[in-house]
Image: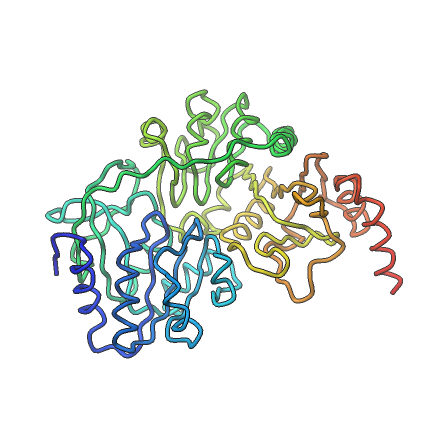
Length: 433
């Protein structure tokens, strides 16, 4: 089926055909920015009208969930519309109703590929011309490649390519059961707040640790900008990451990010997706970026080929036993762990590499982010044995080769000065109790 315009009526028609004869359906959406928000909305509307039970698997990086509106609350609460977050942010208004998998991102991808996470329908925004023999993934490959390799039905909104990465996979046209053509969607400039003074101090401490020739995994947002500024001036850095942003363009222009010393994929910036690029940044990165599926970017076997792999990840809090929380605030899940555990483990095992966890020592309200213990029943995002360094604005704690007591003292030493005595006394009370 080829539909010529992604109008609301056409989307409803396509959704109706995709759901024909179904009483229950499990729908997987591509990760944003390739998430087809309007098509998701149409599928929800048709499913609810026909009394079809729909489970929706999404990875909305911004956590906007624009396909939902207040009118869907009843269907969510009674279980007719079930929501499962695979990655990304979790909106506060829906958090109590959003399920997740308590596993790493590579494991989720493998579950989709093997059918252990069964899917009936895969939907995505793809790029290309409807007359082409194959289509591109746009700016995000993610887990979509593995899902399309399964036997699930597939539908895509097809947009003309506005930017093409030279080293990216393609999908045969005949893999899709329905195509909906749409005009190009020029991404709006992503406004990222400049790094704070605290973030800049954290980044400066991290730069003191990272050696020349390291291959980096780093995130997105203001912390990535801070790191790009602090790492500028290093030599022959490389990147093998999950999602990258335009912050890397600065390092490409300066020659810092040459990738010459990578153990694999020399000269290439390997990632599964790119977000928030300005047009000039896209030009700088287009020939250097190799977009690959999560099955490759997060695979321990692929990562093991990289010597000097340094994973630079942020978290929300860490306890004195070095358990990492990157998902919860006051018991509410606000984000997904993504590939943090995948890269932390790989970097910890890499020859000459290290796993680094970064966080401000206190919240905006002055509460310590280094705590005696994570909340009871709260799952850790990354395990203590996969953390080599912890960095706050107050310095870095090298935890390699440390006993539990030594780790505890090193973490307290980089906590906010106002909380150090309390952390020591709380630990003593807990131990004696």
